[in-house]
Structures are given as structure tokens and as C-alpha cells.
Amino acid sequence: MLADEIKGCNGKRAEEYARQLREELLGAVRENGGHLSSNLGVVELTVALYSVFDFPKDKLIFDVGHQSYAHKLITGRTLDTLRKKGGVSGFPDPEESEYDAFIAGHSGTSVAAGLGMCAARDLRGEDYKVISFIGDASLGNGTALEAIFATEKKPENFVVVLNDNGMSIDKNHSALYRSLSKMTAKRRYRTFNSFLSRTFKETGAFGKKLRKVKYTLKGWLNKNDFFERCGFKYIGPVNGHDLHELIEVLTDIKKLREPVFLHAVTLKGKGYEAAEADPARFHGVARNFASGENSFSVALGRLLCERAQEDPALAAVTAAMTDGVGLSEFAEKFPTRLFDAGICEEYAVTMAAGMAKGGLRPVVCIYSTFLQRAYDQIIHDVCLQNLPVIFCIDRAGFVGADGKTHQGLFELSALRSVPNLRIFAPKDCAELADVFDYAKSLGVPCAIRYPNGYAPNLGSRQKIGDYYRWETLSDGDGVVVLASGARAVARALEAKKRSGTDCRIVNCRTIKPLDERVLREIADKKIITFEEGYLSGGFGSAVAEYYASCAQPVRLKIMGAENKFIPHATAEEQAQDCRLSANDLALKIRAFSEQP
Image (cartoon, rainbow, N blue to C red; front, top):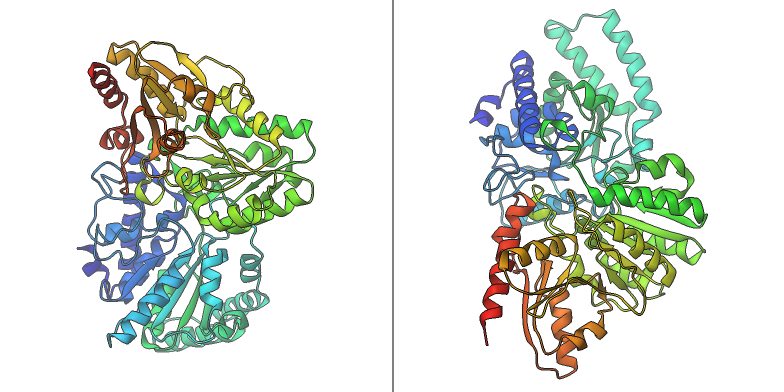
């Protein structure tokens, strides 16, 4: 295993390992897609950690696991199957390897998890180092700051390594990171360091002492009260791409028992010129480094630009995902009306609530998997006050290669129970505009959910309104399929063709409220609900609850995802594994039709 070879290595040998790892992960992402910029930026840091520490006895906890590719290669995993069904996950997963100490798909968790692991270690009388590897703006996340500020005393043998690349997924606007990156002491150190390097040759025994003097001086000049007062010995900033310096510093840290905060400055996208120049563009890429095609994200961005031109009160809020949710053009055209909260979803939602209270019409553009982190704020700050905030929920449903840490299957079940909130699911991008305008006209909290990837235009366009919420896309006298969501509707239309039956396909674009007029009309029919969401608490549950509340006996079958975490694969493979493909629905329609 490469981990054994790297342990104890330094100098040219360590640099060669870093070069090989960078080439291998570049090749793997070119072939399979994945997170590129973030992984390129931490190759040297990862090699240095494995050179000095004893993993898996020591515990390495990643924050934002999309910087773990080099770690996976070092620990004996090939990236040939990266993000493919049955292959290597794009994030750390303890089920995959004992070297993955803690699962990490969302940000801000590593310091809290590290402190918890230290508590377990100390109470059990065990002896090992715990290293929390935080970066890509995760330090500004509320959970990370809570863990850092919660106590003034931190446990021994605990190391936090900050990968400071000045970026989040998009450009980082955090005041915390700005203060870290612009320390006066850092500039003073560089000036003196340059003088020493010009005056003396760092060779032999004297050179080793000189480097020690420079390192000590560096720590003294850059003493950071923020981290010192939180119970850490602060060291840095160090060059996150200088393996000689990294290994020397980490070797010294290993000898210490006191808690340490190591500040390493890196370049996101390091080693690939295009990624260095545009790290946000290469943060997450498809095969051959192509940008992923996300029809709804693009359509939303254009729609918001049009509506912002008409309405000066409209503003957009994102949590470090400007490009990912389609807001790049909006940011260029309306820079004062785009608010990037960083990787702080809770803050983003409460800020939007304040904006709405002050008279603006905020649109929170966010991935489904990240929205769940702000559930309390949605309930308490937005819906309790019935504020006109619109949540545009991207990546709702199966997400494909990002896998179980990022599935968009939770938010519908969570949001259905929240008073005052309306929930919509447009069938295509054309209907997105109608649904958005309708939601905006209501002046109440609204959520609009839609999937990633390519979404075809399904043709029919009956405007949504109070007196006509659902639309029949394909009429028939047989089984009635109530499909909710873009992929579900598209599969339902295909399933009708495959089933060979005279079924009716209904586009259920309002989930809350339901279209009770349609439900009353079809009560004597055989009904199938079909959705990309969990069975528990989802759209099908809402339909069943309605009929139960009316004491209406119906012949109803509900198709949705079982209550389990869905591993990485393509979105279509995930649908097949959950028996939610067009073919699965066609078989269900045919079998149901044949029942008396």
C-alpha cells in the first residue's frame, strides 16, 4: 500500500509521490468526472500528513470530503471506478475503508467530530492523534465555529489543519478568511525570510538550525490570538505546497501533546493551469472536465435575471453555490442583489427572512441536500412569520454520482409538515417560469423543487392557478398515475407507452396544497402515485392522508424510494435500484390494470 511507502519519506521522494498522485487523480477525474480543483490543492498536504502520522491508528477526519481523492489513492483505492455504481465514493466513507475515520459530504463537521473522537479516546484510555482536516471555507461554517468557540480548553493530541485556499466552492467572501490571509505578521515574515535566504545558504547542520530559527520566528510573528484563546497553539501560515516545510512542521507538531491549529496556505486547482485560473469552474466537473448539464439551474438563472429587471425588490441568496445553482449571470447583472452567505445555510435562510421582513422578495437558491441543514430556520424564521421567501431547491431527487451524502430525497418529507409553506414541482423548465410567477404572486413562503441533469420540455403548458393546479398530460379511462416532479412525469409518460394500457397521466405540480378537485374526481379509479422522494412523508403519503381524512376508500398504490440511503451511481441506475424506472412503473400499471 502506498501509505506504507510514503510513511517517513521526505525531499525529492515525497515530491515524486505528490507528482504521481496529482497525475493519477487528474486522469481519474478526466475519465469519470468529480471534484477536481479542491483535490489538486491538497496533494502535498495529504502526502505530508501520511509521511508523518500513523494512520489508521491516528484518525484523519476530513471536512468537506471532496478533498479526499489523494487520501484514497494513498490508502490503496483505485479511482478507476470513482463515483460509478459499486465503485469508489467521491467522499470519505468508513464502510469503504478503515482509513476513513468519519463520513464527510457536508461541511463544518470535522472539528466537532474530532473533539468527540478525542473524548472517546481519552475516556477509553487510548493513545492516538486526531487530525481534523478542514478547508474550502468550511471554517466559516456555523458548526465548525461552534466547535472551536464552545470551550477555551481543547484536548491533547488534537490537531486542526486548515487548508486555506481563499475559496469556497465559488470565491470566498468570508471576513474570517480575509483576516487570516492578510495578517501583517505574514508579510513581515516573508520579508525577513527573504533576507535570511539571501544571506545564508540553508545547507548542513547550520542550515537546519537556520530553518528552525525561521520556523520559530514565523510562529512568534504570526501568533494568532483568535486561535490561542480558543485553546490551540497556532502555527502558520505555512506553504501548503512546500513538502519540505510541511513535513518539518508536522514532525514537530507530532511531538507536541498540546492541541495545535496549523494554518496552511494552498492554491485551489494546483498543478492544472486551467483549474488554477478558474477553480470554481473546475470544482465539480463531468467526464473530460466538461461542465455538467443542469437544465433547471440554467433556466432559473435566466428567469431570475428577467424578473429582477422587472422587480427591483427581487434578490437572490445562495450559500457558496453561485455557479452551481445557476446564478453566475445574475451575479454579473445584479451584483448588489446577490447575497452569498458562504457555506452557512442557516445564516442564508435567516438573512432571507430578514430581507423579506424589510420589504424585499428574496429567492433562496440551494441544493436539496444542503437545505436540510437550515430546517429550523425555515420553520422558525420564515414560515412562523409567513414571510414571502421562495426556496428554489436544486438537485431534488436522485443526484447520481455524488451518492448518499448528497441525495435530494429528504426535503419534501421534511417540508410538508411546516405550516404556511407551499410546495411545487414543475414538470419542465417552461413550467418553472409559470410556477415561479405563481408562487411569487402568493406572497407566502414557497418551495419549488427540481432535479439536476438534462430535463426535456414535455410540451403541454397550462398555466397554474388557484382554480386549476394539476394538469392531465395524457388522458385515459384506466389507471390514473399521479406523477410529481420532472423526472417522475417524464417516466410516467414513457411508462404509458410501455404498458400498452389506457392509463391517465396527471402532472401533480402542486404538492402542498394538493389539487383536491382532481382527487375527488378520480376517487373511484385505480390510482398510482409516482415520485422521486422517500415514501415516508412524501407526495404519495399526502394523497393517502387526504383520502383517509375524507374516510374515502380508494384503490391506491404509492411508488417512492424506500427508507434507505442511496449509494452513488447514475440517477437512472438509482431509479432502477429503487424500482422507480419507467419500466418499473409500466409493470405496475399493467398489473394494477389487470386486477378486478
